[in-house]
Image (cartoon, rainbow, N blue to C red; front, top):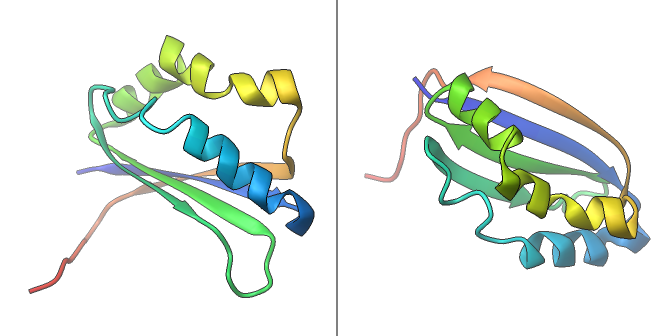
Length: 103
């Protein structure tokens, strides 16, 4: 069963383009990690300010290995060097119970 990690990040509207730019600049940092199954960056389209960074992993251990990796460190360098884009964030954790795709 996969585990899903969702980083809910509050981003002021005037910083939205910077948020998208930073994620585009780090594309691929996570995709080669063992146990990685998927990534989605969700930008709110209904007036909210919370973006969702959704990753899916084979196991909790695989996610923790990513968090401790050099790739994670490189991917988050922009936050340290350029300051945060967000005003707050929360990490949510779920077990994938059911999924469905197109027929």
